[in-house]
Length: 97
Figure 1 (cartoon, rainbow, N blue to C red):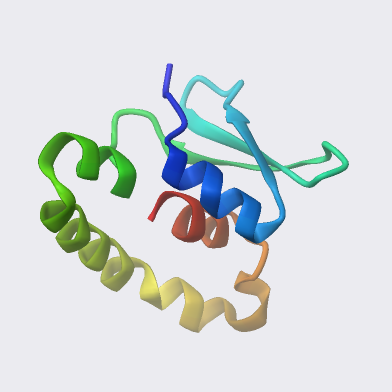
Figure 2 (figure 1 turned 90 degrees about the horizontal axis):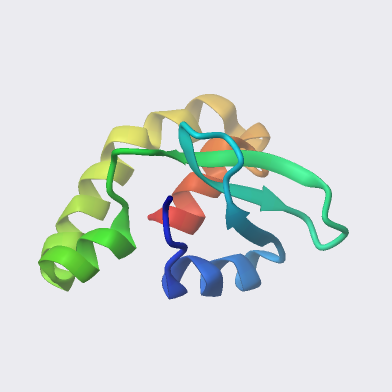
């Protein structure tokens, strides 16, 4: 089971959401609003994220991986425009990266 990192908990507070370990075995985190309404599941099990890379391989490596993630997923923001806000991609970008 994925252990939610302090980085993600802090980012969740900043976004005004709650995070819990996912009940979906293929995902890392479930995201909820502050009324405990489910929003989405994010983060595929088996893949690392910014905080995991920072813990395991150091901040410099994690920053490089975050940059690559954001370059790879930037197109989603451009395609979705305002619809990106609140999407699964939005939460993954902001909570895991």
